[in-house]
Image 1 (cartoon, rainbow, N blue to C red):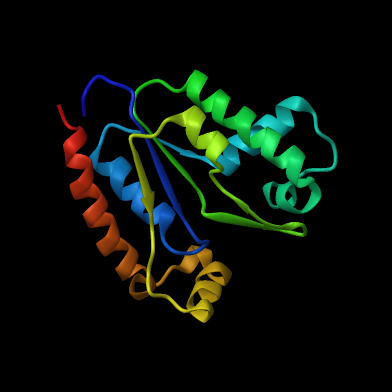
Image 2 (cartoon, rainbow, N blue to C red):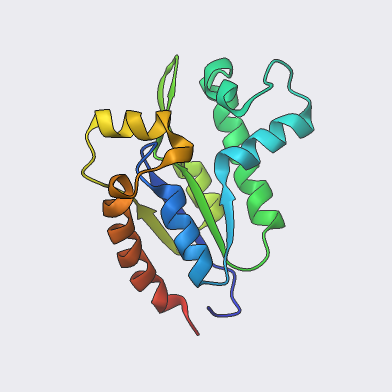
Length: 163
């Protein structure tokens, strides 16, 4: 890749293969991988927000407005602290008791200014996604074969970033 700082967003529904594809990209390119939710959770801990002990509690316990404000702060933190090329992964939408909210709202996209946004899709049915989520540490290769094909297309697209 070039000496410029490129930001790439990677998104999709839970269990579709974002992490698998992200790891393939990181293996092939000089790029740092960040999970947006992990960075958001670190920010919550840094700010001392009480009542959230685990990352999965964020979507359940925070009001949508507070969640959105934290997404903006997280994006600003990533933009400010990131050096070099960065791949940022997040769910397409986040299911909350208040309804679905975007993983990368437009306000976050404006801050991060990605050069490429990738939506990972795979023809998995809901039952397959649920079984992948229930057996996360026992991924079946057959369950991730379609996302890997999408990942190869993404890797080909990333060639344009090479200097």
